[in-house]
Length: 182
Image 1: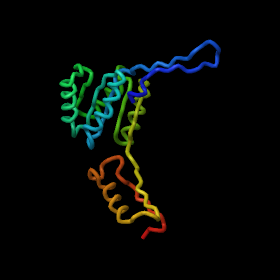
Image 2: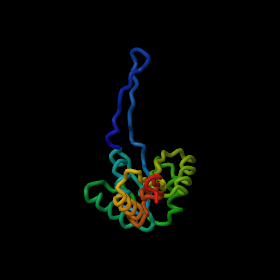
Image 3: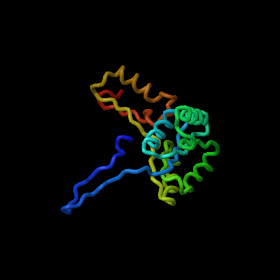
Image 4: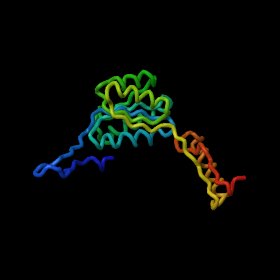
């Protein structure tokens, strides 16, 4: 994301004029993360926001708050000024409602269920927040006629049960071409 934070000049159809595009920080970003990959999800969302010049409010999953708190401490030790990365822990509903209603928060980044994503989308419309949603996956595992079946079986098992099967990319459907279906 940080690589795309540059302005550009676009040719204008009107002679003697230029169109200048400037990319600026959107402001405070609300970061709402799931429990299954707490450090990876937080850093994946916070890093681009910081690179764009935004501050963040991180609302980690209620089951993994210490990961977010530890990352915030490490960020301060690394030189990130206090107040740039803020962590709020507690009841998800109350915190989510405040993040959605608070007009200071201009963008929301959420990874989680489709149901909650839908609620956030409705809530974001009230304050016209920008919204990035990574919602529940429906990942297929496809086995074609020419597949090495031993490798396909091993791959399907790994794909389905990685992290106890609780990631958005775990196979939820296994599709097998007729020629090898048994």
